Image 1 (cartoon, rainbow, N blue to C red):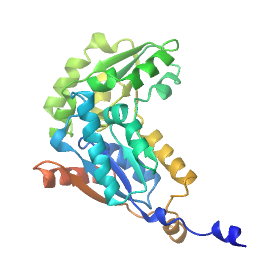
Image 2: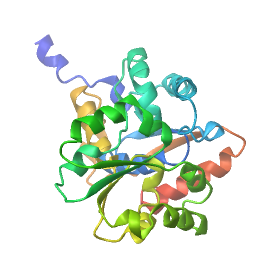
Image 3: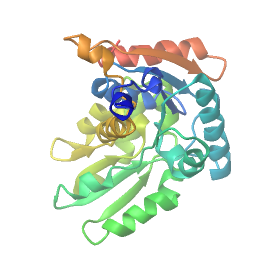
Image 4: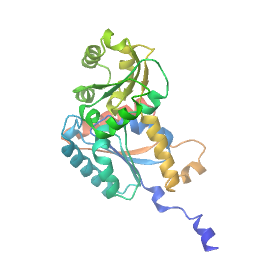
Length: 278
């Protein structure tokens, strides 16, 4: 009887929030997809804007910063952590996983889905210099190089521009026009967005490269993976979903490093509102 009873006891961890962090506002693009997949969960989002961008810093610096943010969120009491940053994932996820018992989900350039499209032409991977230099990314390239021509495209400085203006302003359009000259786009079949910030300007990228080029990002896959992990660990908060016929709007607490915290929190909330989330 006791064994059967235990199967019906709710895991107290289900009520804890999910932690999500990035070097800035880019992780909001991931958070939006996660909220759509898990509308009854609560979240804590940390934007480390004081140290943004991560993608141009040395690996040991990014690793140290990422571990400190993970420590902060762990102290808040979370049931899972999403590293919503490709760069931080590439250099810090292994150590963070060793340190904490809860599920830790990371980001990596979505090469697999891009390759499996089976399109004729180059696959361009837009990412920060550090992500493209990482061992994790280059292992992926070696694995898929016999199935597709994969071309890394380091986009140094683009994260800073998006942090300043994510709404497709003149500076972003000029940057993209310079990167994607007609000669550079002629043979491209797909573009992989290897930085969560770039998802915020997907429309602007599509306007430059044209409708024939498929743009791929890993946000939906990350959200699905997180849901599966929480289900496997019996950490999904399903109690509210069972009682209500409509999804709840997510509750998100925001934390930002740096002196412009309130400005950044307002920007994060606006980005979620643009997705119809809060």
